[in-house]
Image (cartoon, rainbow, N blue to C red; front, side, top):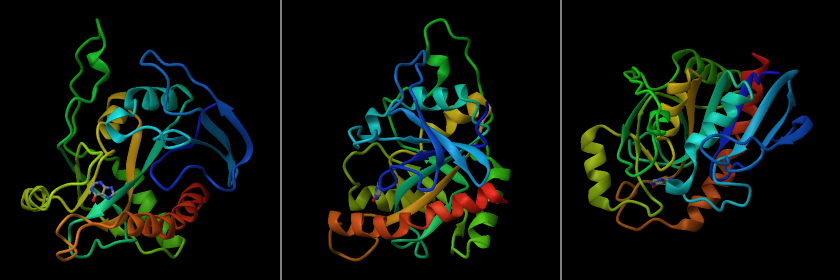
Length: 247
Ligand code: HPA
């Protein structure tokens, strides 16, 4: 049985409220175990899956997430569409804390993360077109769902994927801004490219937790504020996903 939609939940989103007939599936993969068992269930009459990217108790730092196992497992369960929910810092002036956005581009600054299924011993090298890193139909569906749910969301933006787990320096964010990044986060890659390698539609629902370093004035970034902003903004995510399923 396939999954109409799978959610990769990030910091601040550890389950999918309202799921019915919930089951937990432990899915082994050739790349090891996913971050957590995959929770499947029904919502708005559709079958959906939820995977907590950082593990059920947020054990896994962004560079330690087994992205290949996560994507492989969701694909193995028959996920046709995957929405990655990612907490991010805002760089562009209209992307302040608590804003939601559906980015349309990525620049990858991560390193040392297994980022292709072709890395496996004996695997055939596969090149994929990544000109448009996200699925256009799924992006459009997410934006339309947010509008139906009456939730403000920004269409587009470039996601700069950094290594973490530390936040960036002011100079690093100034460089990302010069590069054309509008948002910065630690988990957008290699998730997006692994979905592309598997031929699964993938889009990112970015939730702005804070101004990126140096973007919100002189002060440093308060972790308490990050968590308070995330708690408030993540509450808007499930209604969008419900509208997406119902649409
Ligand atoms: N930088 C990188 N990742 C993040 C940030 C940030 O400022 N906020 C939330 N995730």
